[in-house]
Image (tube, rainbow, N blue to C red; front, side, top):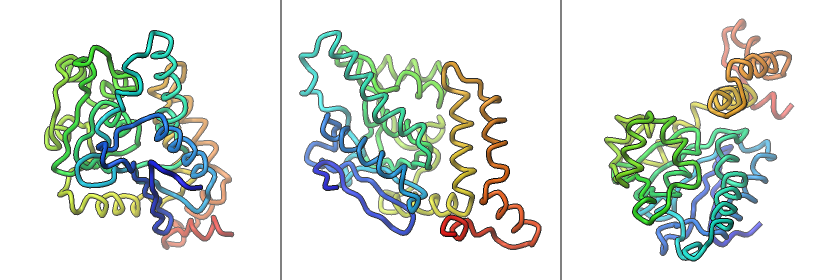
Length: 263
């Protein structure tokens, strides 16, 4: 399927998705979110893709925010619908995706851009990255999960400060706060992300997917994390990848989960 606002690159079992509106600093508009939703639906069914890297085209921005011109004149009902639709179709979908998604944050990640990065399972930022939720300076609040995920990642007090002041922080501070997992020079960002993807791919895709679900359960209202962990743990048993993993351990060899998937 052809896309106008995103582009992709498949390297082995790793799919890199670029938000591709560099002339707009990769700002999220409805068309881009629609395309991202459709692509994610395809990727979650593709057994040949094990890990996804999400980044922005160009060297200035991951995603510099939402395209404000699209909703500047929205009323209450339209605003609620905009937020709800984004949650369901993109941001929650990424957070609960059945494959690991690594955000490679290059340059500005503001507003909806930071919310997109926070939806991903892991974040790696280049040293030129600048992150923040400036929505209150526009008379609105983060509407794509920012008020919740930022507090989960860095704690309530600091999240309150950053949201209320609309302050922008740099990569080094983001690392100290726990907002990102790693930082690196911009020219090595995708290499760093791919290196993490390779580490993940040494392991059972089924177990990794179960782990994502179990960890998420502790942060989703109405779910009990330990109960989901017990369920997901049990589901691993008897799976061909569990049999391969435990057999390889006892035989003192590296597990070949790719062979299991192909077989």
